[in-house]
Length: 439
Image (cartoon, rainbow, N blue to C red; front, top):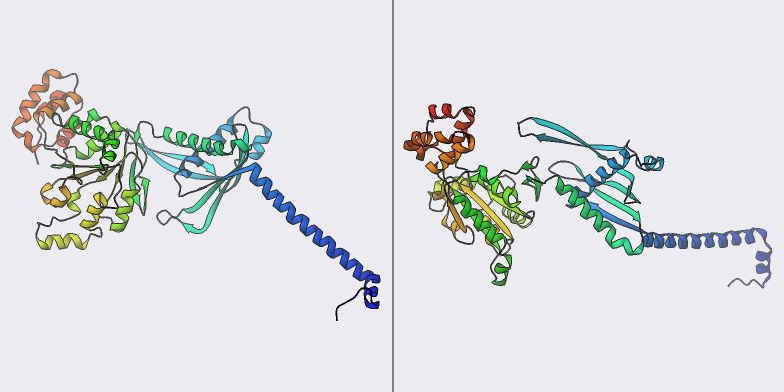
């Protein structure tokens, strides 16, 4: 039977002070709950309208640009004479992390560099007259398997006008990228594969002048012309439906300048170098395919000593089995990575070998290897050019040196002559008198 407040029991409840107080508290509680929920929604609405947030995961390329840039800004702001007490309070320098790097100078000396960066947590920074909140958050239970460093997220929040939302963080990212690239001006980056990504190997290296690698007459010009023509012909390839990629094979005895030329060529064309070790224990066909597809822009892929990775099908079966036993990347996997259906485009591959006769003909066909260039032992042209490079003030002695080595030039590599000149760098006369013994 339902309660009726007109009945005696209903009148009793209404007249009961405890019931009235409870009902009042219930009403007040409900009102406060509604107000709280409404205020939270309104606060979220205001936050979305007034604040802009950018999240950058440490796996993203921009992370390596933005964090050093923000650190540099914070350091600059802290040392500025215009910084105020408010700056000092909001940009504390007592919560820091350290990044240690080793820098090798041209003279061979190694220096240690310590970079102080904001530690995980919340930091504030005044950027372009606007305060931004920076929060570094480490992801629990996840870390890079190759370094053990936990993954983290960089969250940047700022109060902006509606019309500036789109442009604000774009400007920050562009400035961070420009700041990062300044450290690489005049240098060549060398990447190696770590798990399923590319990472810089060591410090950026000073670009080697192309003129410092002396090849036989016409070789340098031929290769430089070919690759520059290819780099500017993307539309020609696309219009004809031809895969936009090119492969080069440099072959010849050791010490003839193959790797040195690739490094100098990369510097001359403002390219970086990505080295792939096909004999790596964790390298598989799928991983190789993926690495080929995510090569950093403007980078050469370098496969050194390709003959050591695979045995030719024309070699004895025992040699093939011996090579396959220690190789996880299959020959077909390499061919598919180079020019298979899933292979990437806009790519330049360099391969080197000391024994071209050991390479499978399937690897050498056009589309996989488009240009083959022999790098041989020193010629008299090279010998004279190298002599003048080391002894520019001894031009009258060039012919004497060339005459001395001419009987055995085909047995001497450019690397041997360079080592000979380094050993006698103070005197051209001593370099001529001393003997170069072929291997």
